[in-house]
Length: 479
Ligand code: UD1
Ligand code: CA
Image (cartoon, rainbow, N blue to C red; front, side, top):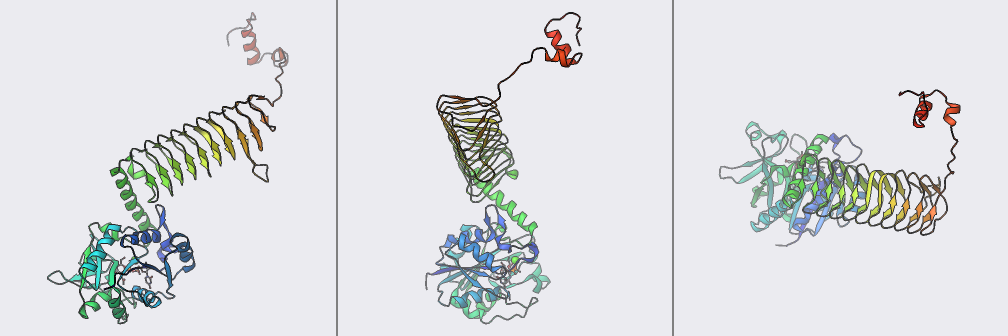
């Protein structure tokens, strides 16, 4: 027997009930598309070939596969004549496949890798021609039912809509995932007929046909019936997302991550969180986000493709494609965008936005600032209300702020401009020319004082009375 293994993933249906311009299998579930999750799970049995049957919106599915799984082959099923027809189309396109073929549904993303490994191992050890993965569920509505004889041997599958009352009462269902001996599969697929309620060619009929042809068939029952759930509409998608969330969160908690409120914590399957990270309620960690040990995230924080160093603290903030260094402090209400890099022990505080900015070690922008396209040296202090004006209406320019520089409150640095190491900028300045190390840049009107202006121009007002009292003038009573 050949040791070759192949995966065939059925993904030709549009998924009409999703009511979407996007094919069902490309909808997202915690960091990956449904199809992406299924493709990843197939790695468990190390297939030599991965074949995806596409049909509806095939261009979109193929474009996704080109990016996400370049080894996967696609086969076009022009008309969706049933799951049996889909597999037959794949085998016709690949006439040389040998050994084991595992068929999976592209819309069932919760299958554990260990389950697939077990399915293939049982199938190959027992030398079955067909091994179907099944589950015992409380509500089998809509699924195919597994019919067994008195000794528990699998006889066949019957679809919900073709089942009689006794069969409808069966709670063991067909997951839609199977391992086949490819030769038997080819032979039996040729015999399929569409004599059923849907007038389709049912892959499930191969079970009975193979048994009748004298081949051994069997089943593997999953321990966790949620693994077989598929997605047909957006309510089910939300249900699957909730199940996957609980799985990811439970795994993380077991690995040593504290989640104060797992129900409001949404961590993508693609994100990484080290032990001894503390996560407060309302946190989303998306994409390639990675959080190192001792960091504290949240509450109410969304990090996308963002790296967080150990001991960093991120409170009520939003970060995208950014790097938050060890011991850095972010938020509350900070927005880090597009390649912002915060070095260790830096601080980005309330209502500060950074974009493509490098913040040096120990540098601080504690409140109300915009830092775009800027490099900020170690221990620099960015005062409240500072704006780095990076955009001239046509192009973006870079600003350089040196180590230990001090930028006074409410200053505007008009890029391109540089402030040298240890230089000071006086509060309220608009800086358009470079300031050398150690110099003070002041760019504001000098203050003028007009003595007794209030007494002359605003006599008798509360201000006038207050001023007179302050000067100790007689005859002015307390307000
Ligand atoms: C199928 C099984 C059912 C099982 C259930 C598990 C059959 C006849 N029935 O039912 O026993 O309990 O899965 O979820 O197989 N597809 C194609 N081309 C087609 C038809 C379908 O690629 O011509 C794809 C669909 O896009 C989908 C998958 O195959 O990803 C399953 O097809 P679907 O029509 O949803 O089958 P079910 O009725 O759910
Ligand atoms: Ca289905």
